[in-house]
Image (cartoon, rainbow, N blue to C red; front, side, top):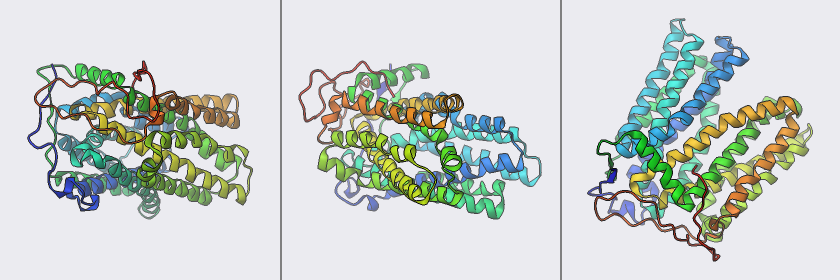
Length: 460
């Protein structure tokens, strides 16, 4: 039987856990610096690896598709296992191991290129290994945050993380382009190798004591995975928010598969303008994450998330109506800023709620269920978009993707969470070794009176 072992000191009790600024929180700064470096480095690889495959290894369209598929496959296959391992073992150690494996695998690419022995098969293997190690790292990293800061500050922490991640991703892409031009795509990957080493070093310097780990008593990992799935399914708040996340991810994946092609080919947007539009989107994501706590306090987390999700389909209208020209390019850039701003605000808030209401011993598995569903949705959505785009055309497929954006709105609107007026309370700390149980199935603090809010929904 799985039991939660209480830690001797699951929280800091000094000023870093109370009213002090998060920027004065040493462990939070180290965590944030490491993860931001990792995000920036991953953006370098996202820029350099396709260039390396196409221009230096002369990959065909099918081979490039396989390369992208192998990079997306590990989260769909391994997320649940990674989450169970993170609840069983030390999260920081799992993060460091993941970083070091990624750095070692990626370093073989510039080394092989320097010796003129790099092959496409090696690049595919490296992408697959990096993806698997990244899943291990991310499962532990996301679930570590609630043990670093008090849960009353989870939303503010996620707000700062989301904003810096958006900026780091944009900066990493620009740095990747510059390094690729100056050094070549293979040597440009050394920037990502360095980012993994920085992430491992920052993680090793975190001094907070982790919460108690799950005691397995010889149980198989599959049993822990099943427990995580049941845990998410049993709590209506976790279930609803996870399905919102998964359905939004599916809809956006359908749109993103054809989005760049539509802008560059149909709307005749130049590469420079396309880059500026993407930069505006990143700024929108950062702004949405930064303003999420204030918006949640002003309007309530539930109404704010519902409004943000409802606005997202409207931001697709300029794209569907646009024709070539500077005026439409400016309009599309503004619409993308608003779209990713809404996504940043809603995403930061729903993740914070899930982290706040989940008990310590289930944090990684709860997050892993969401990662598993969202990661599994993306390849399916990409295949669907490709098939529909070939069969009925890009514009009708983009219309269909826009309608799919209404699904997460409907999921949240049909839930009592739509009226949530303040962030929920965390679950009570266990007094001793107990088996993890789902959070209370009683109604969340909502602004409307509803019947029993428990749902038959799945988990995401």
